[in-house]
Length: 553
Image 1 (cartoon, rainbow, N blue to C red):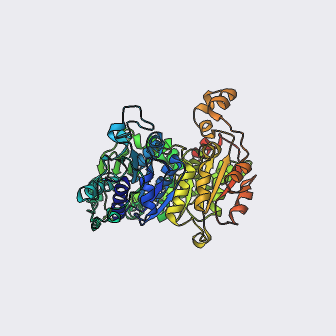
Image 2 (image 1 turned 90 degrees about the horizontal axis):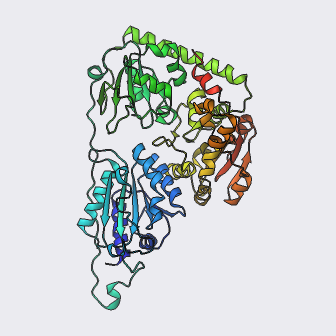
């Protein structure tokens, strides 16, 4: 069976199964997919991407927007380059497919070039791993692919995530002359009719049955939170606290400054918490969820649910809003929480106003105030700065790779979000908006090669490099106190000497510099088409992070 025919059958079947994007990384063993794409076997968005690691995180970004992407890579180390993105997708429960081209069985274990044991390479980090031999389009092949897509989407009842489809290709890897050219009778092409597997809907439990009465209840929303969180809050009187990337801010009704509130004396009065999504950003929230005198109700349709301390009282797949009227004690509590949030906001304003105005916290406020499109926040300091200091993200779509909370692939993820949200290409960005990505200098340096990807797709993207001269996140942790200044800079800071203007020019990306957050606001108020890298030096100001957390104490 010609390898290109196998590749065509796979791509046309995935197209019919709902795959929206194919990101193709060049290689010889994966070449059959290239020929199939060129021949039009896939009707969705297909594009070549040079770097496998960047392609992996671009797929993560696409999946975050609701797309279903597939990444095609050649054999050998190319597969290993996808490991960080596969881990992020697995823990963030994002559906994506890895199509890894492989050597046939007779070339494995005999010293052949670019041959390794890549079947099942990702182990427990994928929802399924499927091996395919060269074969004609058939109901059997389509059945395997339907199962792979269902596993990626978490259907009919499971957890979404990445899936590997490992395809062994034999020579020839190029198209061969069809049988009809040699006088044989043409055979009608196989038309795939794949099985669409529908996800099962969780049966919601009654609020009164699982949450019960409470005088001081909260709803805590982490990444991947239920879209019903605001509805629960309004019906129960439980104030809604939400991490920036929870998705809850887009629906509104969030009480800001969650870390300050939970760290205050008021936080010690909490007697019940409804948790939705994966709140892993702050230690104060984790301490709250670990308290034995707090009834913790976890709402999660998938395993593993987040319960780091093992303190959850009950786990339910879904939850109905409360039906009983809000009791007087809970209503009074909600009013006190709102008033405390206003007080926290005023104190944080005063605290930042007395400083230099050039910290990551100031930058976060400036970005929030001067942009309106989707936000992509680096998983270390930037997302924490937004969580601590930004008073409102009402109506905003915010993304952050919090599945593994790593800095890897942040630029590529932002590009994927641009592609999946319509912020890329020659057409102007929607309503003049852009995607804004905020990241530290080490995060930007770690993924600098993805600037080429941003330029190649014409991403309407501002990449703000909040440069605090190295790993500023560690200064806000115990390491900032335990290590000497010299040891900190040597082992934790790792400041990089980078000419960001030259870096942007090397990849054909526009450049600007903002020496203060106020200058940044002016730049963001004048968007342009295409990607732009903005170098924004900031001060570490590690002392401000605990000061803001404890501003109500």
